[in-house]
Length: 239
Image (cartoon, rainbow, N blue to C red; front, top):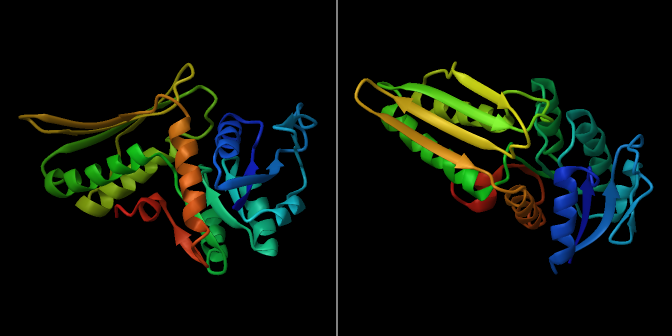
């Protein structure tokens, strides 16, 4: 049984990951983390107290992290100290912060992905193939939409899509539209347009469960690794 820690346990994603983990016989949820100034820090979830101290991670095998870049790096240090493997779905990292994660992965196994959804990772593969075939002759646009609470724009997923297109076609993507409205969970479109046709590859998230389930799948995968930096393509074996 995997001893699991969940960071941001009182947030939208953290809460759903926690609920699904308690339903999964492969996990024992041992640590719930939240920032110290959260107004509900003294709550219990499934009768488990919430901690604000990263040192609590020593009771876990794997940490799932969907929070802020700063919190993620603080927990990265604690995971290194206690040899806790990581699944990171946080977005908005700077290049220097990514470099810190890469350095830590030389000793610690980490799954880092801008999107843990199986469906979105299939979209990545389809986009790569389309960019290889169409990239030279088509104008390329990415449109992403999320809820008004999302802080980073473009989304991490949109940035990943752009990187995939650039790697497959050799062309830089300059047209990315970000929409922030209502409680939209996550919509992404990749549009290839020429003078004779338009090809659209899209994904619409209906619930956060697709990300939570993907994160739990990644947690199971990372327990089999000793060190290294992985993404969901590795987890799903579709790269």
